[in-house]
Amino acid sequence: MTPSPRLPPRTSGSPGASSSPRSRKNSIGGSKREHKVGVTATSCANCGTTTTPLWRRAGNGQTICNACGLYFKARNLTRPTWLKRNTGAKKANRQHLVCANCRTTTTPLWRRDSSGNTICNACGLYFKLHNVHRPVTMKRAVIKRRKR
Image (cartoon, rainbow, N blue to C red; front, side, top):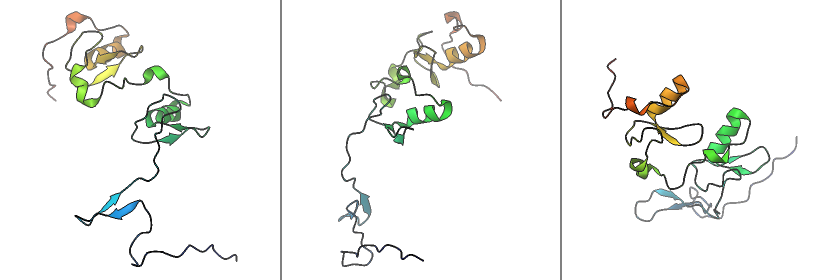
């Protein structure tokens, strides 16, 4: 049996203290706070985005964003660049979205058509069912709730 490698001795005086620079005690509340050490700006090798909830690795070892990684995992193809959302349209600016088909500004869910335009839920579902764009005459001023 081969001996296991030895770990370096602890340099801290207290037995429960961590020697890692990532976790430090907060002097006010006493709770641990995570400090990221040596983080560099990362960008997706496929679409170039710099913000994502999770960074992934492509098959060739490149760093890719969560969206590109999930797209590749589901389809075994790289994610097209036209699917990338505009960086100006953030969650706080959703009230400025306009449907490319019927020009409505209120919908429970925003969708995208095959050419990447932002469309409302009604137009997206109509196109998915009938394969033609929803006529503007079908537009309603009020969204009705279904009674089930």
